[in-house]
Structures are given as C-alpha cells and as structure tokens.
Amino acid sequence: MYIRSLSLRQFRTYNRLELDLPAAPVLLLGANAQGKTSLLEAIAFLALGTSPLTNIDQHVIHWQSEEAHLPFAYVKGDIVHGERAETLEIALERKDLSNGYQRMQKSIHIDQRSVRRQDLAGHFNVVLFLPEDLALVHGAPAGRRAYLDNLLSQVYPTYIEVYDAFRNALSRRNALLRHLRDRGGDPLQLLPLEERIVRTGVTVSLYRRRVIRELTLEIDRLHRDLTGGQSWLRLQYVPNFTPLRTEEKAELQNGVTEIDAEHPPDVEALYELYRQSLAERRHQEIERGMTLIGPHRDELLFISDGRDLGIFGSRGQQRTAVLALHLAELRWLEQVTGESPVLLLDEVLAELDRARRSYLLGLLGNVEQTILATTDAELFPESFRKQTATFRVSEGIVTAV
Image (cartoon, rainbow, N blue to C red; front, top):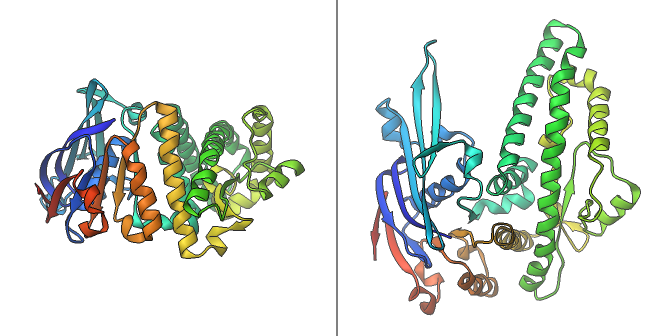
C-alpha cells in the first residue's frame, strides 16, 4: 500500500498543495517549522479520520482561513493497493446553527461515496514515528490510551463505533453525576447509562487487551535485536475495573499480558464486575462529579527486565522501547491487513545512535513506502539517499529536488 498523490487546502501551513509521491522512500528536507510535520500529519489524518496531534479538528485549519471567518480544511489522497486504487477525502467546515452557535462539520468520502469515520478502517494504514513519542513511555496514561485507540481504529470499524458510544455514555453519566451532586435526586437514574457504559466499556477493554497481547508477541524479539540481546521488553495492560486472579498477577510480574488467546475471558463475568464496581463507588462519584471506574482510566506499562521504564528507564531505554513498539505496530498491521502500511518518520533518526539508525534503515526495504522528514540529509547514508525521492519543504511549499 502507498499514497500516490496528496492534495491539501487550508491545512496547517498549507494554503494549497498538490503532490505526487512514488512507491519508494521519500525524503522531506527542510528547516524546522516549514511544514514537514504538517505534511505527515495530513497523511495520517486520511488514515485515522482525525489528527494524531490534536483532539480538536479546528486546530488543523490554516490560520488565514480562520482570520477570514470562512474556516475550512480539505485533505485528499489517492491510495494504491496492488493493482487497485481508491480516493479518500476529508473536509472540515464550520457551520452556523440556527441558535447562533457554530459547529465544525466533518465529511468523509471514499471514491466520492459519503461514509462515516469508522468506514475508513482498513482502507489506509500508517505507522507514525514522532520525536515526542518518548512520552508514550514516561508521559501521562491518556497518551498511551490514545495510541491504542488510534491503532485499533485503523483496522476495526466496530472499535470506533463502540468507543464513541462509550465516550458518549460516559459524558452523559458525568453530567448526571454533577446534577445529582448539585441539585440532588435519585441515584438510580444512573442505571440506564451505567448499563450502556458496562457493555461498551468491557468491549473497549477487550479490544485493547487483544492488541497489546499481539503486539507483545513481536515487541520482545525486536527489543532484543535493538539491545544486542541484553534486555527483554513486555507490554503490560492494567485494566481499571477488572480484578485479576492470583495466577494472572504472577504472569504480569513476568511481563506477560493477562489474557491468553486460548483462554478467552468470561465476558458476562466482566460485565457483572464492572456493574458492581460502579455501584460500589456511586456515592463517591456523585461527590466528585465524575466516573472513576472504566477503560478511560486504563494503563499500559513498558516492563523491561522487571522494571517499569516509565519510572525507572533512562532516556535511551525509553527511546529504544518506543522504537520497538512502532516496529511491532508495523508488523502487526502487516499481519492483520495483509499489506504493508505507509511508514511516516519525523526527525526520528536524529534521536537514534548509529547502530539503531542502521537497524531501522535496514528494515525499510520491506516497506512499500516510507516518508521521512529531516532537517539534515547527512543523517542518511549516501547509498540510501540515492534510492529516495527528495522534496524540499519551505514555508508550506514543496518542491522536488
């Protein structure tokens, strides 16, 4: 799979862009703050249906469009799958409402057919490396949950649907909790929303467990390669509402995820555990005005040689863990979809030592298309640069070199 052409209108630093791309390594060369990251963001936007860098769609709109009070943004890409090609389009436009307010409207099309965001799943897949990805290890848990959600949304349309339903029910329950705290009322009003949260929340959690288990199968081998066999790495999923059995806790201490593919969980039992957890904390949550139990508080840990790298790992160890994670993500997407995703690298080589840089570049031959953004072409061996199509990026203008 590769992206053959990209069109942008009023997206970040780009007023207008028409760019043809080859099924080969692509090098985006330019100084900082010229539009390289925005171009990678636009490509990922087509895959995810949302930006990987912000939760607010309006933030991707060009500032001049905002100042003109006609805010809109448009991204279009032609995606090639073997002998078949399809066109993906996403448009953002602010609409005036009858009550005087405005809202951002997003429209998505596949081959000119209007679709929902979840319908994008499976049509275009990317793996995005960013310098700030170090926060996936040491940063707040919300970033790790967002990473899992973006990865799952590229493959499973049902996940997007269930996750959106969970967030909607969670938001409504939180509003009702605040109402009960401030104005009083019968707490049993919460039951219908709690049942919806239980059903969707358990499903969200199970999807996350599954992808973590499957990523873990790849990540340890990749991490051993990157460290010369000196260190192992496991992903550890810590669900917020599910009590673990004693034997499962022992497995977790050895770096193994708690759900084995051959022993699927008892879903009805998980529903009941979640119901009980919500009931037990109901009065406390009314006092706080928020839901304290659920997958919106799940955690993902990086465990290496028995230590949590988010707390005890050095910067070098954390960087190696992130590199292994993204390479495992690449392998996982290949296995699940049968196609190699587009690999997007933003200034990643500058963060790696010579050995890891060579290791990463050596893997790119197995990827149909890699797009690399850098300020310094000399980071890449001359033999590699000869194989790439190079574009210079300057103030939102992209020209072939």
